[in-house]
Image (cartoon, rainbow, N blue to C red; front, side, top):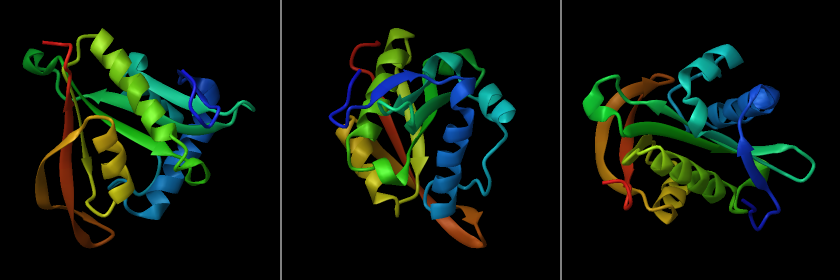
Length: 168
């Protein structure tokens, strides 16, 4: 896959760990990406994300511009086709189609694997993420009001999902 920015998407691996976690840290520091307050170790990150559904967008130089990864929602068989995802783009690489490139790679891999729903929660203040997800075919399904405290402040979370048109 190639983006207008000249980036390509490749499977995420241990060689990307430092840059992936650095981009995650930048998102955390901005304050509107996650309830997390610090990135995990690579070992924790690696153990929590599904190996077949995590990618990085890299520039021609090999620099990681962003990443996407999915986790299981539940071990219950009824939810076998449902994953939760995260997508992060380095601040310097935003607005160049990197996020959409990553989401499309995730959509392709999950649909190939029989996943029928990709979901996530986004802070309503993260308007860039909400617009990106809408472009990728996600819809808002509701808002969880005052669902958690973040740096001492109650935060809402907008629930989004993308239902596969091919997995039935």
